[in-house]
Every structure is written in C-alpha cells, then in structure tokens.
Length: 262
Ligand code: PTJ
Image (cartoon, rainbow, N blue to C red; front, side):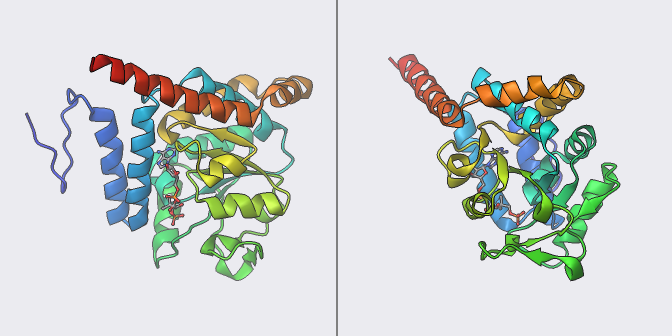
C-alpha cells in the first residue's frame, strides 16, 4: 500500500478514510501555498471532530437548512459570499459555481492578513473561473466599527451593502458584528454550538465540502421558483429547532456507537 506522504500526498483510494484524508491534505497544501492560515489547520481539525460525531453524512436536518439558506440567498437584494482561506482551499470551483447561480459576488475576507494570502486566494479563485472578486483593493475598503479583528475591513460593493452574507466556516466575532449592523447571516459550521452557529439566522451544521455541491444542486432547482414559494420555505424554517435537531443527531449517533461496544 502506498503510504500517505506529507510532501506528496498519495492517499490510496481504498483507504477507509480516503475522503477525509484527501481534504486534510488540501488544507495542508493550502497552508504551504499561503491560501490557508496556520490556524486554519486547527479549525479544520475541530471541524473533523464534530463531523465524526455527526456520522460524516449530510443528514435531513442539514438538508432542511441548506434549502432554507438557498431560498434566502435567492430572495436577497444583495447577497455576498465571504471567502476565507479554508473555504478557498477546499472548494474553489464550487464557490465560483454557486456565486454564478445565485448571482452573489465572492468577497475575500480574512481573519489572518499575512502578506501574500489575498493574492494566493485570488489566484485559486481565478483558476476556478471567478471573473469578479471583491475585497482585493485595500484603498477602497471600509470598516465595520463593531468588529475589531481584521475582518472589519470590507468591500464597499460587497459585505458593506449586502443584506444577506454567506459566511461558511467562520469565527464567532464577525457573525455577531454582522448581526448587530442588521445583516442576515447564513453560516456553515460543523460545531452546532459555536457562537457563529448560535448567532446566524440560518446555520447549516454540516461539512462545507458536502454542503457546497448540495447548495449548487438546490440552487439550480430553486432558481426559477417564484418568490412566494421561496418566502414560504424561509418562513417554515426555524434555526433554533434545526440546531437542536443537529445536537440530537450527535447524541443519537454517539449512543449508537456506544451500543456497539456492549
Ligand atoms: O482564512 P482566515 O484567515 O480568514 O481564517 C480562517 C479560520 C478558519 C482559521 C478562522 O476563521 C478561524 O479561526 O475560525 P474558527 O474560530 O476556528 O472557527 C471555524 C469553525 O468552522 C469551527 O467551529 C469549526 O468547527 C468549523 N469548521 C471547520 N472545518 C469545517 C467547519 N465547518 C464546516 N465545514 C468544515 N469543513
């Protein structure tokens, strides 16, 4: 069996954890290429831990949140997709495709502003076909005063004027700040009790790598739906109940694993 080599990750496809290792190595490679922050590796590991406890599948609860999220993004006047290092390394093609289908621009917004990262992320998105990327021109950026981290610097044509902001894989401060300035927030976070999850209007508790293809599929389906139908989907969705259901999934899954030990 070919070993997993950190320098040249050749992961045997019959490895029981092939998928998980494949994405782990995308994050490692991303860090070497400046796309991912060093802390992005830790964030990814934290996500993996919750994914284990959710059974590493997109369950019905997550699907409900995904449908509501897409409906919300499609009804927005100015939706924007916020891109950080981890999301750019994991699913650049899907970010570009979703952005085109829902007509929401991609804005690079980073917590760790190491020199060269914006450029590296821009390149990976352009390589995936992105034609327009916001958050690139330092000279025009404006500040969100409610936020003290680097994420306060936003594009005047993107997050600043957006009514709905999609923040996959996020740190809690910003979601709270975005809520305080009246934005509607859609989050993807495997941790159902993170501050982001609790503050967001719609929280998709699932792995970003599974969420993106599912969102694209649903967006293609709902794109031509009439607004009334989309609004009904949004109205029927209850984020608190959905998060509770995700926590129940973790409890059930853990109990099932426990029983296997008896
Ligand atoms: O690229 P930057 O500089 O903007 O930095 C990005 C990171 C991710 C490093 C930064 O935002 C950060 O430190 O985030 P946190 O506070 O670690 O939060 C990340 C959240 O995403 C955690 O709750 C993780 O459980 C969750 N998470 C990690 N990987 C995934 C995930 N959720 C969904 N899908 C994943 N693949």
